[in-house]
Length: 174
Image (cartoon, rainbow, N blue to C red):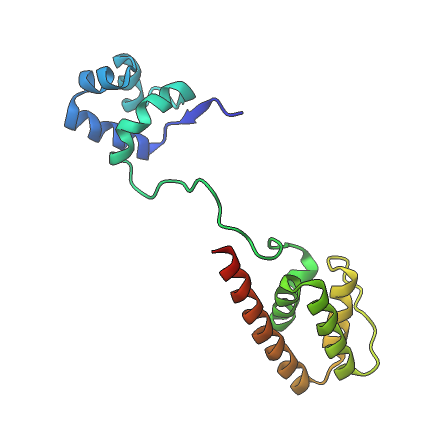
């Protein structure tokens, strides 16, 4: 657990502004933080403050700090987080879109999407990307074996279907 708070330029500027508005002795009295510690922070002779000290100073400095407050909770995520892998980086944009929409579908919808692409491709082999799951390799193999015009049409249909599905999931969340 981090027990120190880094005193950066933004915090120093806020301390200076607050000290100019109140005066350092008043700031010290209001926060309960020693005057010499506040002086050292402004003079850049210290780089961090104990968590307890920061907890005392922050409520008074808050109006002088620029920028939004950090969010307490991240918004809910639909689908997995971004994957960084050399194979994925080297793929074409449409292949990445296919994987993005495929991964947010439920298992029944994924099975239907694989079936649709395999029927359009005829005979095809799954790709052998190590970064992909077996189902992702199946749909990617079928996608790459499908003629280009049909492939684009099927991908657009899948994107539209996934968009509707995501909109419904978001309504349930909010």
